[in-house]
Image (cartoon, helix red, strand yellow):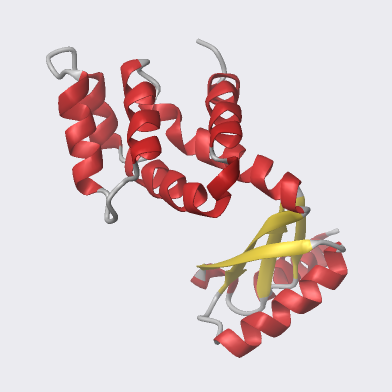
Length: 176
């Protein structure tokens, strides 16, 4: 079977070209559809040969929190008809990458042991933008195992200032 990224690329590129007028709006519904499509029970339902395209479309669009615009419905129908619903999370990731490349920004995921207040997050985002020398779309993921501090992932770069990472460094230093 072809790699998921290879399967998703033409869909992401077509969506990117088709939604150039409303890139932000498309990003919202693509991310929502990706979250829905990531559900394993839904994927099993969609892969069932007794279930037709209309039924899968009805379930997915029914679960969506917002009403999908016409272009989103057409895109979703195409993905389902071609049996690529399981590739939807990768399609969304590649679409985000294309959108970020156009705007000159990147996605940054901040892993934190505790919730971060909005003022502190804005200050952290400003510092990270200076550090990575580009505009960042920051999102926060709670990860209590870090104990304290943060771990920031921007593309393939990782900045880890967590207590867990420092303890691991001390462990390595003491056992070496």
